[in-house]
Amino acid sequence: MPELAAELLRATLETLQMVGLSLLAAVLAGLPLGTLLVVLDEGLIAPIPPLQRALAAVVNVGRSIPFLILMVAIIPFTRWVVGTSIGTSAAVVPMAVGATPYVARLVEGALRAVDRGAVEAVLAMGASSWQVVWKVLWREALPELVLAVTVAAVSLVEYSAVAGAVGGGGLGDLAYRYGYQRYEVGVLFWAIVVLVVLVQAVQFAGDRLARRLDHRG
Image 1 (cartoon, rainbow, N blue to C red):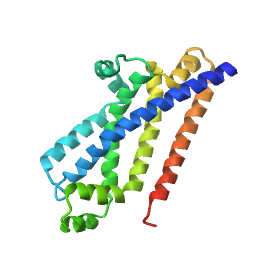
Image 2 (cartoon, rainbow, N blue to C red):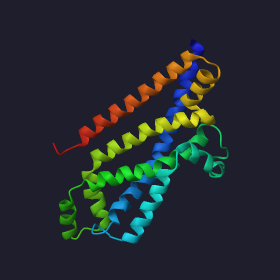
Image 3 (cartoon, rainbow, N blue to C red):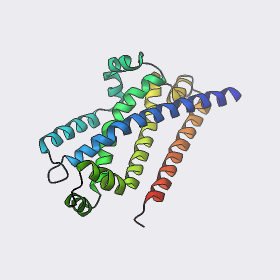
Image 4 (cartoon, rainbow, N blue to C red):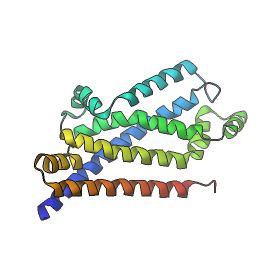
C-alpha cells in the first residue's frame, strides 16, 4: 500500500505538470489567436476577412487531428523542442499544440458573446483596436474566458491520460503499466479515482472563479 501511494503521488504530480505547462502554453497561443479571429472578422474592429478566413482554416485543421495521431505526427518537432519524444516533458509539446486551436475557438466564442453595441460605442469615441480588445472584449468576456480555460484544462487532463499510455508518464502511464499490462485492478481503480477528483476540482475552481468575476449580476 505505501508503494501504491508513492506511485500515485508521483504520477499525479507528473499529470499536474503536464496539464499546467501545456495549459499555460495553449492559453498564451490560443488567446491572441482566438482574439484575432474576432478582431479581423468582417464588420468588426479591424476587418481583414481574407486573413481571418485563413486563420480560421488553420484552426479548423488543428482541431480536426485526433490527439494520438498528432502526438505521433509531431515527434520530430517534439524532439527538437525538448530533446526527447518520451516522458513528461515530451508530452507537454503535443498537448500544447493540440489544445491551442481548441482554446482559440473557445476564446472566439467567449468574445463574440460581448455586446456589439459596447464595442461600437468605444470605437466611436476614438479608441484604438488594442484598447477595444483590452477594455471591452477581454474585460467583458472575462468570466466566459475563465470558463473556456477551465474546459481546456479538463480536456488536457484527458490528453495527459492518452499521452501517459504511450510513454508520457503521469496517471495514464501508471494505469496502463500496472492496471492493464499487469492486471492490477486496484491500481487502475485508484488512477481513475484521482483523475475524476482532478477533473472535479478543476471544474469547481473554474466555475467558482467565473462567478466571482461576473459583475453583470
